[in-house]
Amino acid sequence: MTTEEKKTTRTKKSQETSFMEILLDTAVGSVRSLVESVVDTARQSVTRFTQNVTKKVILFFLSFVGVLFFLIGFAQLLTALYRIPGSGFLIIGVFVLMFVAGVYVVDRQ
Image (tube, rainbow, N blue to C red; front, side, top):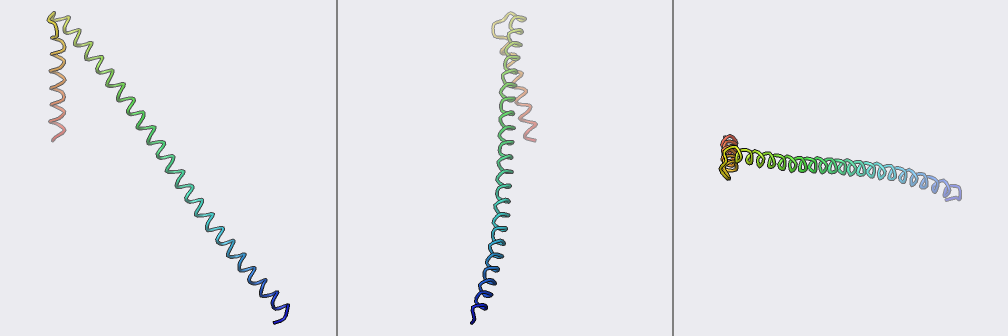
């Protein structure tokens, strides 16, 4: 083999190697981009889910406190109206139990 043939062979191998490097770099870049976009989408979904759950828990707690104050106030109003100690709380308790029982029966069907 002459020197010129060796140079031509090296140049062909060098070009093939460059093509393979470019192909691998492109493939790795595409996979990396895909993985980063999937991770980013998952992160956004988890953040949104966490924010929604937090809002719902806070609203449930505040609603529960509001209903509790309403029932206590109404019970005190009934106690003052009937002038029998504890009668308002007893009446409210009975209505709450009837409501819960009704929801339970409807939910079972």
